[in-house]
Length: 116
Image 1 (cartoon, rainbow, N blue to C red):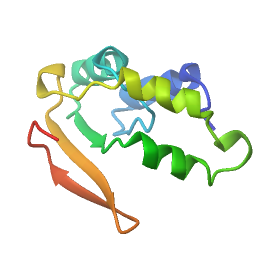
Image 2: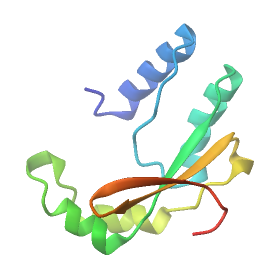
Image 3: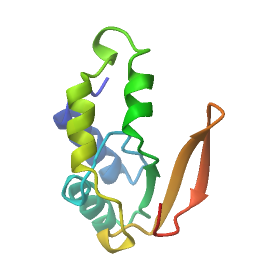
């Protein structure tokens, strides 16, 4: 439905105005990419919870290869995003950070320990 950052922003702003909790489910690899979301939600009084998904480029490319059509991302795109990846920090404005990994095909969520 959202497919563009513009539509994502419209929905986020509507949620903020309605005081409706929301999640940004998008790749935001750098602190700069995340800043706009954090600042807007923080200013509206929302609690900011971040989830860092374990990043292994080989595994990401393998998972991506099972996708079809427009869901498949070119490997160069995955590699480019991986190069820009910055670990999140509470200093960015997060109230809570979580670490997510895939184990035996399932998501495992742990508390952030400021290390990987």
